[in-house]
Amino acid sequence: MPSAPRRSPLPSAPLLTRAPCRSPLPSRAPCRSPLLRRALTPSPPSQRGASLRSSTLTKPELTALITVLTVSALWLTEPWHGLPPEIPALAGAVAITAPRLGTTTLKHALTTVPWDLLIFMAATTALGTALVKSGAAHHAAHLITTEALLPTVIAVSLLAHLVIQSRSARSSVLVPIVIPLAAAAGLNPAALAFASTAAAGFCHTLTSSAKPVALFSHAYRPRDLLKLSAVLAPVTALLVWTCATQLWPHLGLPLH
Picture 1 (spheres, one colour):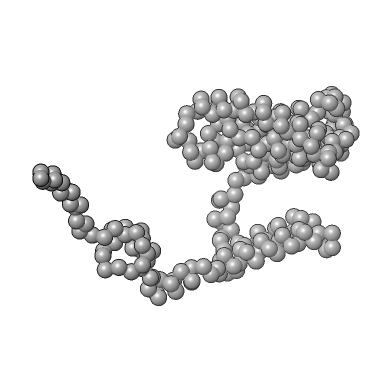
Picture 2 (cartoon, rainbow, N blue to C red):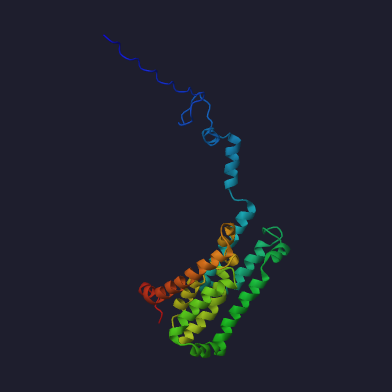
């Protein structure tokens, strides 16, 4: 009888010199992954004590926290004690710059204050007060129809990021002017201020318009921002107008 053909032997698998690091269980085989080896290696007691000490607040941090909470509590309880908001703010500034109590010196604090922005915000606040007391807001409101006031506020707030980079500063500048105009036109000042604040959040046109945009400025070109802004600006304006006229009245913020 003819003999059966011999089968060729299977190629032997290469021997592993080191066991792969797949299990967190202790093994005699060395682990090639430095991240896993660091995760499985317990930290010495000295490092654990240092991490616990770093999680506690330092004396300057505790002083700053107490100062901020105290000033905020005085602002929130103004109807009870009757103090103007400027007095708690000034007291907090004095406490934070006190020689032995504070966390910084008065000289260093004065050099870090953005005086140009602060003066600009103070001037716009005074302008809003003057608009109300002088009656200019009433006359200015009659120059713009009631139907056109909301789109005008949205457009101005939407373009404000080209001049003022900070979003909080934009609202601080616009809201004191929007409120008297809305009151003179017979509109709800809170609704118009809310629409202005929502529109002022748009910041996609320039690299300097917002910190996140500047942070990733290496990933795009300036003309890419212009193209994006040309699309998003009308969409944002329409969305804010729709919410102010259709959605927010149902949520307790009517326009009239």
